[in-house]
Length: 255
Ligand SMILES: NC(=O)c1ccc[n+]([C@@H]2O[C@H](COP(=O)([O-])OP(=O)(O)OC[C@H]3O[C@@H](n4cnc5c(N)ncnc54)[C@H](O)[C@@H]3O)[C@@H](O)[C@H]2O)c1
Picture 1 (cartoon, rainbow, N blue to C red):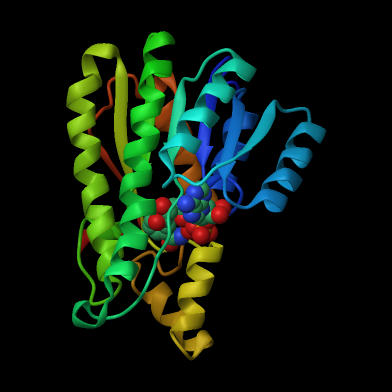
Picture 2 (picture 1 turned 180 degrees about the vertical axis):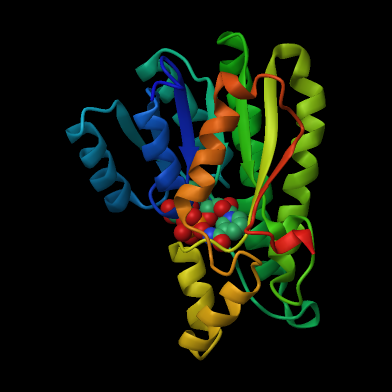
């Protein structure tokens, strides 16, 4: 407890899944949390729970692919909490699961707009706030799909590969400002995103067994498995860690 005392974190996509677990763990570690998401009622209900439990939490409705919304929300967070120290670039979408030759331009753009341009806009607009705070930590949710391939979701693979290298470039660019930038690469984690993916695979029971078998540890992960990685990268314990890839995948990429 108290690993993030006095800090302020912005978590994009904080209403559900990995973002929600990360928000809760960060709040428990003493951090004020700002949830930015497109899901208004889910986020408001979550903030009510957090505030009811005695944590400092607020929600700003925001689509990460819209630059003006990102800029406005981050300024509002800084005004409300006095500073921003941590950004978790977590909002993401899977998009169309079709072979490349069958994808439309709109399907391609949808995924890049949220997963890549969203990380760009959020990083761009948080930098002045982190500089004012004297440094900070940016955590980008890439994926095992940003490290190795699989014969599915081509736009998603492209987007997560981009996030991996955006992370390293920004780590080098902002190191002098004491702003650390790292990526996390989860294996499959039980969230609404993966529930949807499994439902699209047809036989749901079989799909669950085959997904688990992809991970040498023998099961799919839980949102908390990633949330604790985010807490670590956000904390002073990770003060010498930047440009790193934190792989949390039950051994998926170890083969
Ligand atoms: N679940 C997994 O197995 C897994 C594996 C590897 C990487 N990831 C990555 O982790 C991140 C979180 O995934 P998840 O499984 O929790 O997803 P999820 O779909 O369960 O939750 C995503 C959250 O992001 C929000 N969001 C989506 N588009 C948004 C936008 N344009 N603006 C603001 N918010 C938006 C959603 O409303 C939701 O609250 C994503 O970047 C995902 O690609 C997930």
